[in-house]
Image 1 (cartoon, helix red, strand yellow):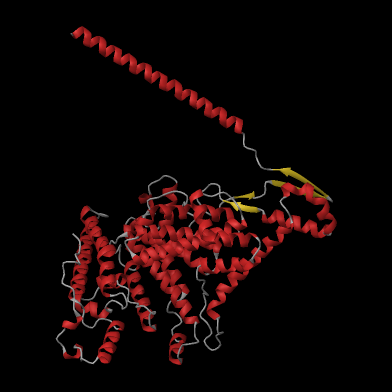
Image 2: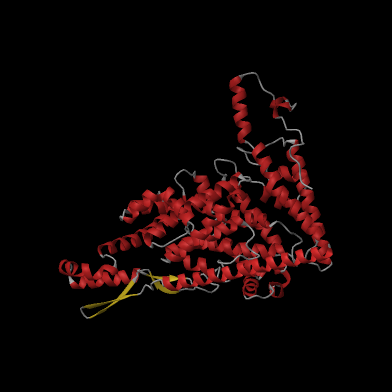
Length: 567
């Protein structure tokens, strides 16, 4: 069963009989009324919205009642639970999007009080509020930001502090959206409170008196609590070793609600630590997630894309360019093949399209810093999007590096509350400026290596360079070159932090006093062995085909003889 939005009569705001809402006949007054009506929350909720909210509330209530029965019977799930989750998912991914596009493109959905007057209070209303975006275009008010924070607190307290597992199951997509939106609203509030230029004294005083609202420690505490409650790290550890994760899941972790919230919280921690500039810790929280293999936990495409974006960016900032290229190329290929999946939702399609563009930009940077082969289709797209910029970056144009980095990087945050008595005009940009400075310094160091040609040509260019550069300076440049050409590269293992040092150069060298010893480290391809193996395979295939032909002819002859005898 699904909620049908098309069969319900469309609500006409001008058919309302209250005199306060009738047109006056004055065009200016009517236009002012219409603008005011578009900007405010619906005081008169359209009938189709009432029906939707009541139906959705009943669906969730039935699910909770069924879940309570299952818990009392000491069962984890059942076909009835799965059917109700399917109904909720259909409403969440289809009906809600249609109603939003139809009624709430430029205004928020009804507020909590209006929803509670229709369906009553309780956990179901809290969940409904997570479904409905209360922020209209133009940004939320300070009150809305605070209300949203308290709403999240109520939901997480209900899930984490219940006596036993909470009687609730939700679609994985919705659980991911809850965690994703939780971090996004923290990120948005962190940037909002640092922009004090246009704020009134009342707003600044309100922020000063409430430093714990959307505090970084509160957000970290929620994410770590969900990880611990679900025992997801232990489950992943057992799962990747080939065991049964249910055997170590515990009382809470064996329920899908806690298990998936725990998994999504790990990705949330990856994102949060990246926003704070702690790239090592960002990747470390995923040490039990094997990124290079599909798993039973990677069911939400948006979660996969977010994971690879932040892992790839962390690799890039840690100077692990080869790993960054591998990660970006893999996820871009995935998006290329599954793009049609995201077209059902305009918001998701726009978000994924933006991340797709950002990852192309980051891949262009990484390939400039560390040239290597990638999938031909991705390389073609990259040339179309950033061909000119890549040529300019290869020539050492720092401005292009900075422009592309500014577009493609995440919006960095400061973990501390600003000093409202002395806030600099661009204080909210300081985290970004700090990360840009670190990146630009690395680019400049790489650009200095352009004075040294590739070591494969060292013998021809060494005499003229030796005569134009002081010996000590030359020695320093060679050692810098060797250091920059060494990268930690993931080869095997579960943790994305694992790896071995590999050289990007095709030759290696060492310095003994004033003598440079060069060795070719590139293993030449043995084309002869390859062709011999292919010839053997071809001959074996020919023999097999001949046997099949002889067997077929023999069968036909036998059949013909049998027919003749019968005649």
